[in-house]
Image 1 (cartoon, rainbow, N blue to C red):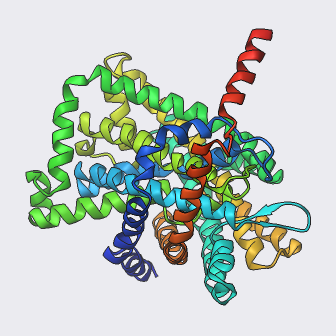
Image 2: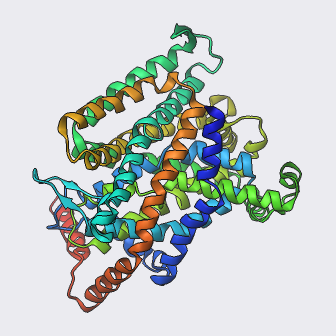
Image 3: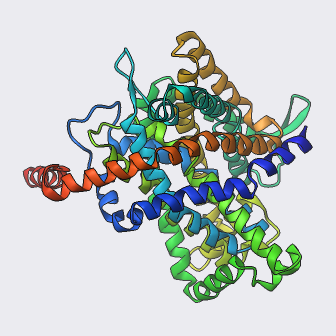
Length: 492
């Protein structure tokens, strides 16, 4: 079974899929005049200024942080390390390259999600690729929408949303609390550390308390945890760069040389310059997509719930997710690993990134204090926990669409999701990661078909939005929000 899954994974995430995902981003970028670069400042402004008077379940910022909760996770800490370990420092270059075009893809996903979203009888909002495929492409394509929903529900409960995340949390806590694995107990015929088992119980209980509250509670928790942890992580990353500034230049040279197969170390490992180039490109793009999820179709499910009247405005907010996830967070991780040479330390996964942060911060804190390990363990635990929450929302919306809103079935699925979280630390992780990769790739295909078919709609909506904004017909409310905050501050 493992061999079969590995073969299927290699086929799903082969060159055609990578070309398709990056290619869609390139097409959208050219058609919209590289809007992701020209309007990035406006997008970041919209991300922190909610629109007034729009329909939706949560604020635009709440929708963004819910999407970030699902994307900022193990991929940013563990995924970057595994990409560099397998493809060399050049993998980071291709991760950034894919993210630059992925921002255009994420913009289109957010725009279409709001334009074609559906208001249910109980007043809740449901939207995402399944609805923009069905409504935008026509009822004849509903089978493709159902296919996306099926793979989304499988990915959430049996892959990226549960076992992989809780396993990473437990591994990080165990590495910090009991690195030698001294305190153990027997469960299911296997030996596990007490730290691993207790962490699994705590995470499961916390997940239950949040998940049963629905999108409002998930968004509320995410809007508090995600920004705080991102700031802490970025500050730690900047400290590493500043305290080791002499290593920054050589690290950038390594990354650029490795990206095109010119790194002698990886030429030998990959069987020549062409092999080194392919490995850097494949690992960088694949892990970058896994991290920021541009093109997978997951983030637009959260975007559809945003309180907004303008689909293009929410598209801009959505694309900042890829910028923050990959261009900011993944870059911090990658630079720390390359600058400290942690990818040659013998560690793998989270311990490798912990080693990078321990070494990088050793000029401020003694290495023996393991301050980097503490920051990484805390970041990984909270990032992965919010990913569990975000993916629960994605998976439930997919299952809702798949079963036409069958409430008993949806309730049963929710408890299946929670059960998958509970057993996550006690299953074969390699097979789970492989299954998660496969279902992610299978999700992406229907979504990419929809994006290509509807790229004309995206361009028309974009042009109309900027025409109305530039002529003053549309007031984005940013100035009013700033004035209100200034008045409130003055009153205090």
